[in-house]
Image 1: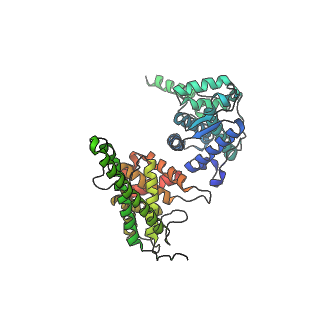
Image 2: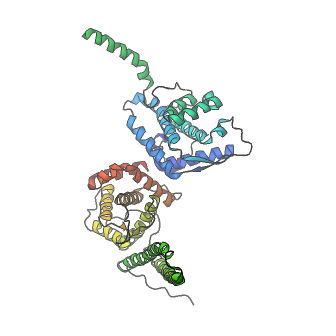
Image 3: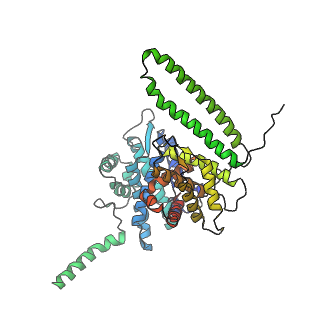
Length: 206
Length: 238
């Protein structure tokens, strides 16, 4: 699958995606492609789509790191934030399933969720390819119905878990405890060291 | 024989005429809606008479509707009417720019208010044109585009371009009027991506962005510099 609507602006995807017009056009493009592939038809709620985008943009700007070496990790996190905004805002509803649709297939079990995940993975892959020359593929969890049962149930209760699930579907290591807080890989590795250093300093101070 | 085309009337005449026609049409529609439930309370012997009167009101309304739309159509077809992509007319734009701007604002505000849930608003082209002229006559040509847009927005808000005639309450809520004017100003600012751009979709997008500003817009309203900064920030995300 690919992300369309590049025609709207010649900017790189990481910049284009921060424009509502591009977001709407590329999301519609994604919906059309999945509809053609699966036979599922959808309705897009334009106003809700705009709200989801603006919610995402606020969350994106709020945690955007200044450090250049955190940028790569932030691409995956930002894609997760987008999935969270889509899952929360639900700008898509299924109009019809094709006859005999096999609901043990994730694309038919939760078609809206499947579109959201596919879109976010595509945006993520496009930015990683353009800016970091990385080719990305999905993880086996993407095709496992059990992952989708868990994804749907858990994000119903807590949409921030969508960030962790997108990591799972893309083969990254998910943070299930505080998925909504950005922590670059470098910081995750260093954190125990900082913690120990703090304990030592504390002991010396006594 | 080909019908002779009348010379187009100047904007100073057509804009107040269009406003007046729309006002009459609006008042008749609103009055009809208000009378409807009352007609049911008329005692049986007089019910037929009441129905006749209501029928005559409907005929007058239909006549005004037909006259209004034909006349307005003729005005809209006049040279200088809105065509091409809407934009902010430059301060040094020639004659007819105020009329074109007013028509664009009329269309934009009506649609934006409808998306915000306010269907029955009267938008005055006369006041919109006046707002543009007031800014044009005092603006330095080298102004930053968002500053200029903010000046126009303030002038539109000061004149309450979108409202309802006195007595026909409720008025358009002030915050909705401000959101709609902000949305239309953004719509006029945004650069077009080419022939594929759907103006209605773009206006809806601008309205959604304007609505999402919430408190930021309320806080910026009294200050043209803050409005300009907010317009610039929103301009970047559309």
